[in-house]
Structures are given as structure tokens and as C-alpha cells.
Length: 66
Image 1: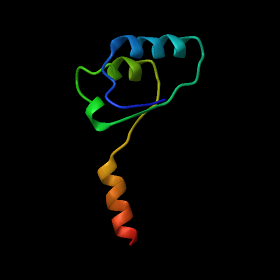
Image 2: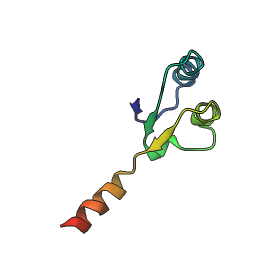
Image 3: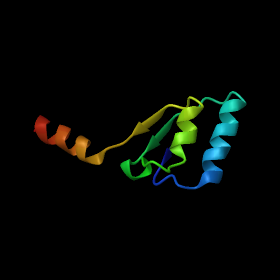
């Protein structure tokens, strides 16, 4: 799942419940979603892989290839 600004606890709890049912889940989130009080803490605690997309890193990689 790719999501921008994951802050809604009901969404994160639904993902946790799906994981406990055996659904394979991976998340791609934006840097804003990564903060101390984020629902991502609970998601990571159950072993769901979380990847942070950094648009600035992608731009730097492209610039260095030109």
C-alpha cells in the first residue's frame, strides 16, 4: 500500500488486523508520516515492512545521472 500522510488510526488498525489474518502487507509512506506519535509505530511493531519515499533523494539521483 502506498499512502500519503498516514495519520488515521482506524486505517492503521485495519492493516494490523489484516496482518494478523496472514495478509502480506508492505507500506510506502511519505516522510511526513514518520513521526513519534504516528500510527506507523504500531504497524512496525507487528512486523509490517515500511518504506519511506523521499522525492528529494530521487531528484538527486536523476540529477547525478545527467
